[in-house]
Length: 298
Image (cartoon, rainbow, N blue to C red; front, top):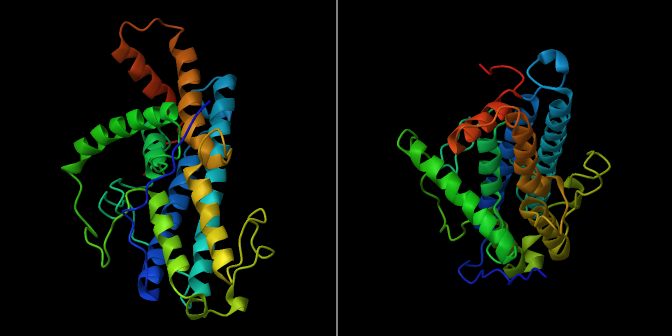
């Protein structure tokens, strides 16, 4: 039986001002907007027809599955953006749709991972998993060790790129005491818990985006009070962190299925010619993933 411990959030200072809460929700909107674009771009970089060449019919089925899942996760990020907008308007802010141009350096957000529009690859999938890495304690020890190994592998690749990457947005107007997206949203939740409810919720209820107007599978929460705000934030955290065996959402599939599917299909392809070394096998897997790209992106 897998056991987990409650995440330690004692280092997160509670938000006690509307200004900081609005700022962090605006940053949350930028993150969700950026990730929606990244997943959608990666999905449409994949082939969808045998006529595009380079894939067997069986391999194409895997690639089509990747494309569907990437598109589904992109829609989840759109849901999170809409939810952040509802949280903003509930407290007297305005929806925030501004974002910086791609590519975004690792220092753009406090999570230390660069974000850009790239064709799908195993490396991109692993970076996205790390971007929404669950908080310590969410996963059991076995699953956590897998995530730690993945994070270490991504960190090496990021270190190699760091010399070339310019520093941007390296400072924040408020203390950054969170390390993961989950902790980031729990910090936002602290503001809704700490600030007086009657003083905080000053936005007009009619300004809320309605589920009947947005095709988001009925999951969009109208935020009018503390209870609905907490429910909205917990939905975002659960979908984003997605512990693989407990919350089977598209994002959790990305955290496990992408790596597993690409390895299975790549291994089957590589097995036709016996690799001479582990390095040869690794390069074959990379080539297997790369030939799924629809076409060079200019």
